[in-house]
Length: 237
Image (cartoon, rainbow, N blue to C red; front, top):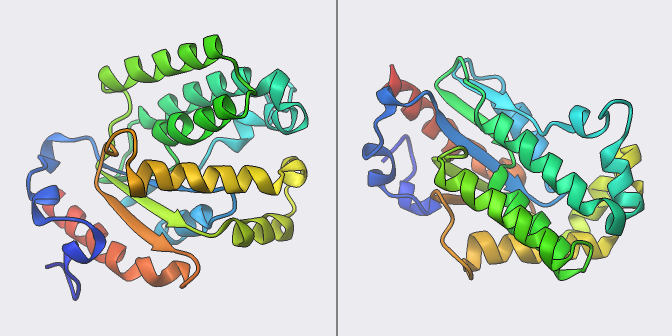
């Protein structure tokens, strides 16, 4: 038991932590996963206050300026034309993020290579914005990167939110590139996150999963993760 809660309350076991060789690892890596507008950035910003946490937000700046080209805007304007190119670049930037050596014991990522594959690439294939050959290429790259241990995770935090809630948040924050995000995309991505992290239809996630429900309140997960952060920092000291 850590602090005032049981790890089992959040889908974790003592062995998930005790079996890890913290002192041999560069960092304990946590990925914050969820739909567009689910509240991932809010959670990341909260944990930035810890001296033991190094946060890695999504590389939006890279996606919106590839030698002057806004790849994210191109994707939303013409997904059929740009989905494959964007996913290739997204995989590259995700792997770069996974492989950055942090200076702190806990490395917190906003999304991971796994959500790119299981949610975004899968959505594009099911909706015919990438074809079978492109899907095979992206899947092949993903499989190789995972087998090469280029994208290891120790914990996944799934910030779960209804698509309607995400849609309202997107409208309120008014990011230029997201003006063209259709509600149907949020519905599709929600279903794919559920398949991947809750139903585990295709394979088990590559790390233990903690679920935070935005419908209750995003901060319901803060106290438990506070204690996990403190615990990991203490063990690695």
